[in-house]
Every structure is written in structure tokens, then in C-alpha cells.
Length: 219
Image (cartoon, rainbow, N blue to C red):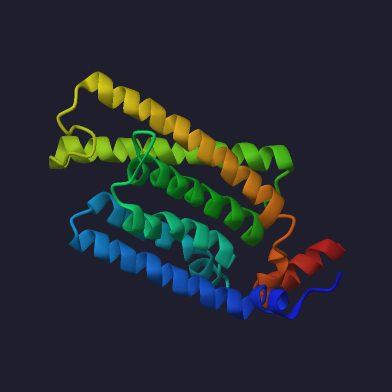
């Protein structure tokens, strides 16, 4: 089935790169806004996602070597959503505290998976891709927890140690890992069934990378 005109435009390399850079700029802007508001953990998180997103462009020294704009949009959603639904709860669970945090963490794992699949020779089968995104999400959640703990211990912040009993904090961390696992499964399924099967990522590669892939395929 031929692609529609709109789909062809959205999947073009130039449009993809332009949309990608707009979303990176939005992440940096959100990070700056969060920093000025005193939300240091979210400010650092937003900037970290932006840095990971521009790794391909920096590595290839080509601004068009950008991630699919869809994955960057997914990564930016938690930060934009946090500003819109701050303080909302779902079944007693703070929406902006846990749900959006681990959607963002899963998005980071998804970014890494897409970067490996699109910009390197690494190719994953379905099972490995799903497990990779889940494990990467859980690992990112662990790093996030350790970073908050170190900040509380060394700098005197109150990301974890905010006056609650230790058993409450430990239970919260366990639920955080559960949330990260669920978000990772969703990210893994999304990676396999959309980004690898339907998004036509090869059309968004820089010309030099596409030529290299064609040469390797012809050997």
C-alpha cells in the first residue's frame, strides 16, 4: 500500500530532524523552568533526556541524525504532563510523583533502544528487545533512586528522606520498581510493534549511514 502524502512528509529525514530538535529544545526549556521553580530533580532529569537524545547527532556530526520524533514526543510528554496535572492523584497515588516519573524513565530506556537499533549495527529479536527495554527501565529506576539518596545524604535535600518513617520510604521504593517494570513492559512492546515494524526508521537515517547499510547488505 503506498504511503499517503502526510505520512511521507512526517517520515522524511528533514522533517523528522526538525521536529526532533524542537522537542529537544522543549525539554531544555522545561528543565530550565523546573530549575527556576526549585524542582532540581526534574530539571536534571529533563536535561539528561535532552542530552541522551542528541547523542546520535553529536556522534555522526550531523544534525539530521536524530531519533524518530515520536520517541522524543513520548519522552517529553511526562515533563509537559507534570506541569498540567501537578498534584493530581489516582487511587491515592500522586500522578506526578510516580506515574509520570516512570513513564519518563521508560522513555529514556526506549530512547537508548531506538538509538542502538537505528544508529548502530546492533539488531535485537523480539524477546531480547522487550527484555532489554524492561531491564533498562528498571536499571534507570535504580540509578534514579540512588541519585536521590546520595543527594539527600550528601547535599541535604529531601527527595527520599522527607520525614517519613524508613519502612514507608522502603515500601515506596518497592512500588517505584513495580511501576518502572510495568512502564518498561509497555515501552518494550511499543518499541517492537511500532518503532521496529511500522515507523519506517530507515527513511530517517542520514545518507551516509543509509549507504553504509546498503553496502553491508550487499556483501
